[in-house]
Image (cartoon, rainbow, N blue to C red):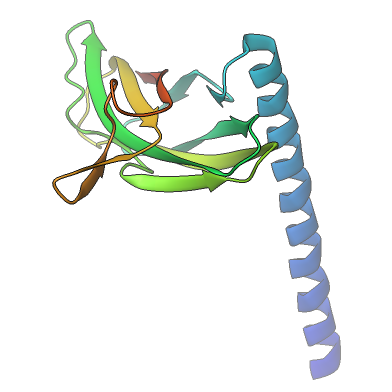
Length: 161
């Protein structure tokens, strides 16, 4: 009986893993197509999302390295501005201050978690993210529009419903 239960659990988890791989492949293909269409090296799979206050939503950020050497991208700033009367201070965006290294001639897709605070009013927030090749500034990695060999700004519109 224990063997049947263990076999069931193994099949359940392996089928869930295969579904996750298929979902990841589908998202990666979607982001790759968007990158090709836009000509950009960095792109969200959904540049506009709707999420309820207090809940989490996930978007995917795709990175493309067309070069012959690995590129490290730093996800740095998170300037937020509101459209309308709501304040965007309680909007949390994951993945800041992390460096993602993309191998040559590769596309990499990374999840980004969006979470408006439970007390946030309904409204729209526009998030501007700086993504660059990092430079060292006083012992900390940062983006610098002049010194970074690659500097990008991507925007995400979050509608809090």
